[in-house]
Amino acid sequence: MTSRIFEFRCVKGHVTDHYVDSEVISVECPHCHNEASRIISSPRIMLEGITGAFPTAYDAWERKHREATSVAQKRQAE
Figure 1 (tube, one colour):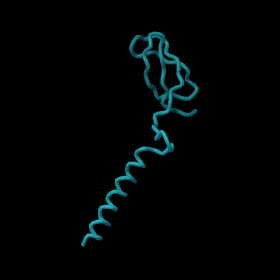
Figure 2 (tube, rainbow, N blue to C red; figure 1 turned 90 degrees about the vertical axis):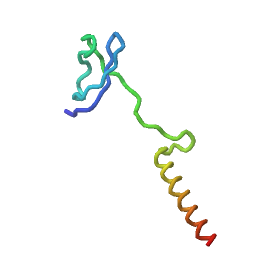
Figure 3 (cartoon, rainbow, N blue to C red; figure 1 turned 180 degrees about the vertical axis):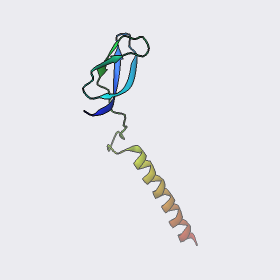
Figure 4 (cartoon, rainbow, N blue to C red; figure 1 turned 120 degrees about the vertical axis):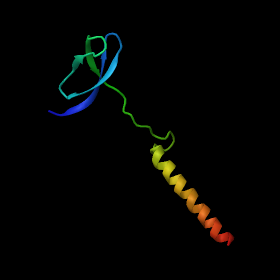
C-alpha cells in the first residue's frame, strides 16, 4: 500500500488534506465529523500560458540573460 496526500470533501463542503493509503476513499471530517469522500483535485503546478514552460525556470533564465547582457555592454563601453 502506498500513502499519499489526498483531498477529501464532506457534505457540508469542508475540504481537507489527509496523508492516507491509496485505498482509503473516505475519512471523518475534522470540522463537522461527517463522512468526507476523496475528491479528484487539480495538480498544483502553473505553466506559462504560451509555451507551457515553468514560469520560475523562465524567470531565472531571463534574469541571467539580462545580467549577462549588462556585463557585455559594460565591457564594450570600456
